[in-house]
Amino acid sequence: MRQILLIFSFVLIGCHNNDEPSLKQLRKPSLSEDLTGSQLYIKHCAICHQKDAKGIIGVFPPIKDSDYFLEDPKRAIHNILFGQSETIVVNGETYKTMMPPVKISDKEVVNVVNYLLNEVNQVDYKINIEDVESVRQHQ
Ligand code: HEC
Image 1 (cartoon, helix red, strand yellow):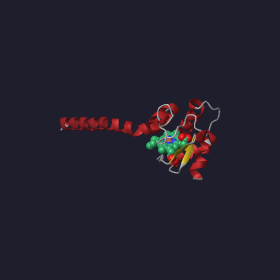
Image 2: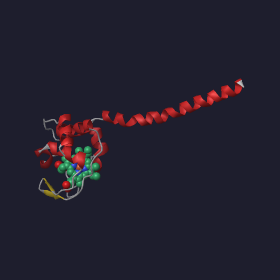
Image 3: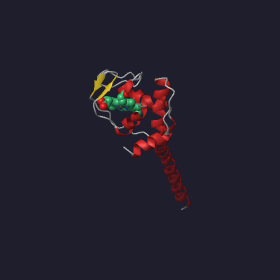
Image 4: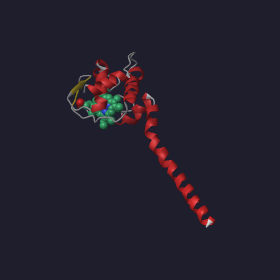
């Protein structure tokens, strides 16, 4: 009897250990909050706007040296949260393409937009979390 109990408890311990990796996997998404702006850009934006943020003319508009982005950086928050499909003109070029919403947290929106402002465009201006919250509320 005791042996059976012993085996049973080993099985239980075995199950417990098996649970651990999946718990770790569940926790992973919150870790992405710690990505830097540049890592977020590569992960969520570069596939379309390209690694160098210069886009593809006529298809994906540039974010580096983009008159549209720099004219009103807060508009970028709206683009990221809700996507965009209206006709826009960026550096004299018309874009009638579609950007889907990007599913990232408000803090990540701040980090990626400030990376594009400060590092990619060398502009001394920052958005903050309140800007993102206000766009979310008054979409
Ligand atoms: C699936 C492709 C795709 C992804 C991913 C994407 N975009 Fe876009 N983005 C577009 C397209 C297409 C437009 C132009 C939409 C239009 O014509 O109205 C655009 C427009 C923009 C604009 C306004 C125009 C400009 O270039 O100044 C900004 C800013 C922008 N995107 C930023 C981002 C950021 C930041 C990310 C990542 C968090 C991102 N986009 C992810 C395709 C994408």
